[in-house]
View 1 (cartoon, rainbow, N blue to C red):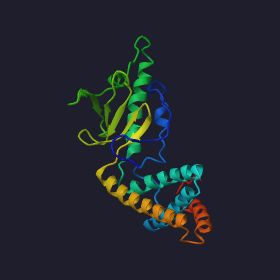
View 2: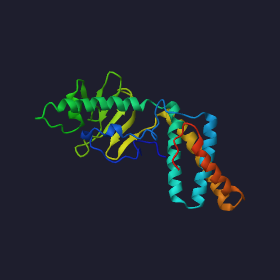
View 3: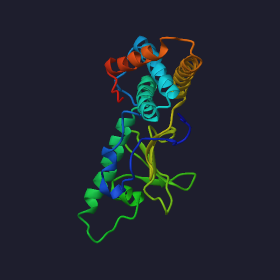
Length: 237
């Protein structure tokens, strides 16, 4: 799970900005955000242990479909774990949608004008659009949300979202879909989560492979099923 840059994209197909649908298609199950339903630390310990065992079993059995499904569960749990320190990414997306969607509605009253890209949408709105040091354009709303048009002529509807004008980018959209960038606080929890669950998975995988636990396989199947009953977790297995 790479959290550097805009590399963790949600599983979305490309949607054009003019369709207005992209703001309704954010996969919040796998993007950490403030207010996300979150188990207790004790529940996380049990869940991570059971999930690691189930992943190890799927690896040992070379069951790619099961491993992929459990990996999606892991991604959801990962997002919930980080959400304890996450920014309010939902609010940022809501602010951006109101600006861009509002600009489109206003534009529809002016049939003679054809918006070419994100900047056209921003310019339709009341607000100050300015050039950044990188030659890009940004607008800062009253809420503090800053929208940066980070695309090019080939990808004009690519943008980033920040909590404040001088803060780091924490959310973005590009032709591959939505993505997020971890804050320093999220990186701390990310390392803690990944080190723990990956080491547990490797340990159980080694035990399964070496036959060190006679009842390991049957127990792993039972424990994998237990994952589905952990409260507040949306499990897909």
